[in-house]
Length: 360
Ligand code: NAD
Ligand code: GLY
Image (cartoon, rainbow, N blue to C red; front, top):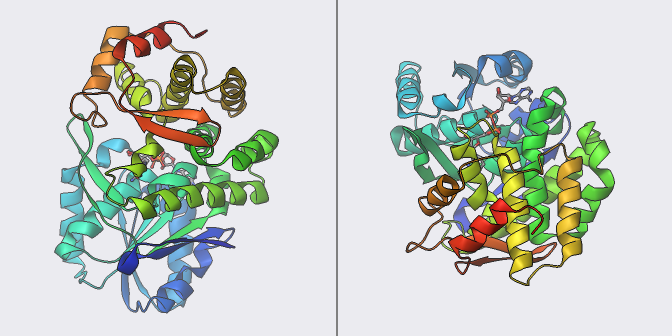
């Protein structure tokens, strides 16, 4: 098992990464001083796959386990679903000390996290991520939220969990497309902060895709470490943390303009490639680095070719994104693999040029 610490003063916490960790949950909860009632929030599929086993081990450890189910899908990240969960928590007499265990991907983590942050002004939260994306990104750093109409993550909070338990074994049942989604964030993290880890990904991409335990554990550990180091310096996302948005300025626009037909991971991959071309055009990045990035993205089964989308709409969507500050587009660019910086000096015309011509 590997451990990563997120140092945030009184809100510091540990992330545990390894195989078979769900069975140890009770032991760690006791170490954190929890006794009696606890609530697992998950979806029906994950309840069957992992929730029932988790409940059994927690029962054996003397906890009184209540499982609350949320249907599948991003549309459940809503105030309505949160409202239903508040009712259920009240019905089962959850108290201020009753921990909520968020067992699932980013949807469950964000929703259950939001509920934990707001029910009775905050109850303890344990993140138990089961997708690669959730293990390397959404379970770490305390961003919890629900969507509001078309606006993603519009209503939310910074609310840190007390513990993150990432059981690598759960990734074995994840569809290949979800592994690719998570890999987009993994590649992003290596590209912005860790050249050596990027080389590891280049060498081990096949083992990762075939879910080799050792390779997956290294991937989750290294990516989590990058996120933790960034968040520890800028918890509230006023500066450095936006470096984690590499590929996301264009990526979010691609997702939205494609009517979400292009998935998040694919959109981020295309966004990273476009941002690399901008970095090259502005004289920061050499061609070799951009070529390596493209090759790795391709090997990760992520798209490298821009679909035909309305260019004007893409730029307009970027200009309305929450990453815009004082009407200027904010971009994360690369100086080299492992070294990124934030700038608002990218002109919309250069973005348009790079989107129109993938050979730039
Ligand atoms: P998801 O939670 O929708 O999970 C994807 C699918 O995989 C779902 O159908 C889920 O039921 C299934 N699944 C989950 N674990 C499984 C397993 N072990 N085996 C088989 N199937 C499994 O998607 P996601 O990509 O994990 O998360 C996306 C969400 O995360 C978005 O809402 C996004 O806004 C959010 N997010 C939040 C942050 C943050 O910092 N809070 C960061 C990135 C993304
Ligand atoms: N996913 C970006 C962040 O947590 O800030």
